[in-house]
Figure: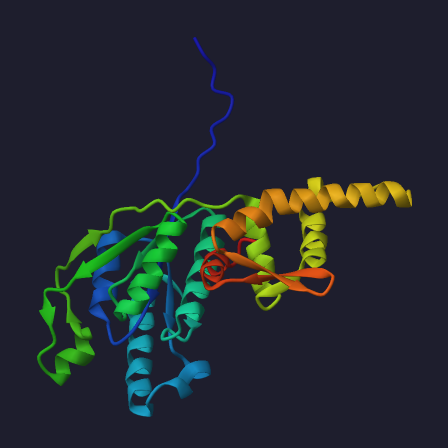
Length: 271
């Protein structure tokens, strides 16, 4: 015999993240099949309108509003995000931030990589794999043949589309301390002094705090913590080519490399 004292039920929310170009049915038909509660639409809006030809921007506005209205009529909560989808870093940062935000809330995140161009498909896939999301591609039935079809369906005509889930690729993550350091560096413009990094770590991690008051003891403890910072974080990041140490007078300056910046962007919203 046994007694049930309590039951905890966790409701999994399904949230879609969709970078959007001149598409419509490839979004709505796929979501109708998969289901869910909420959709994040990322596209070029008023803040980034100057980046596009005026005529192309008008078309983008049409599809953005059309998809949002279609989804709301289907009963979905929709959030729009004005993002420069032609900029690798901007797109990667925003997609990663939204993933972290929704996963923190307990959602299962699905990413549609079919509704924009190839660069964004790569960006969205990378973010999805890094954060263990479901990344999917929608195979259209065919492509539009005239202007009427273009505005009704988008470039891809989807009536009963095939949805292909991409295989999951596991990307090994750094330690929390290493990821925090990369995030701190990108927030500082890509570079910081060792002392600045240490002060940030002190606020986040107990093992990097120096609490002694005696001056001579403080120096010994400070050196121990600096050694710990070098051994546990900076040496490892440098060996992976995520940072460079630059001698600047008496101090070391830590510079974020291009590779390190990608990891830092993937961690947007984590710290």
